[in-house]
Length: 171
Image (cartoon, rainbow, N blue to C red; front, side):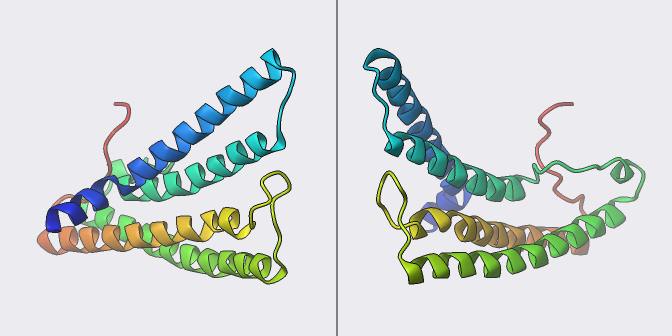
């Protein structure tokens, strides 16, 4: 069970991102073929691509929090001692945590209003709650990853070890 939870912790976002990316690409290919070859297109294909992209963006944001891959200006990080660098990362995670909590609250408000009035998508005729839920799901994942990041950073600060700065994409 512990191996499963560890694998889920490491790969949950990756699998979700892969699913939504494949869904997006396959649907786009099918719709382009339908439009160009058969001179017919559907509104549901456009909606699937749109909502898959929304899920892709929000789950990707949570994944970026986990990997510290968000865009940031870190020039000052090269000139401060490791302990100060750790404190800066902790402060940044705390600020992001507060913002994510506020955004989570307001995003749930939108989902609840949609559920109350029973709004549905135009092409798929599916409740908009399923699509609007991407935002609170994304912020919930972000909060979870921020808590993990804060725990990791506090441990690094207490131990005096260098803080995790994410994997470098380019050097």
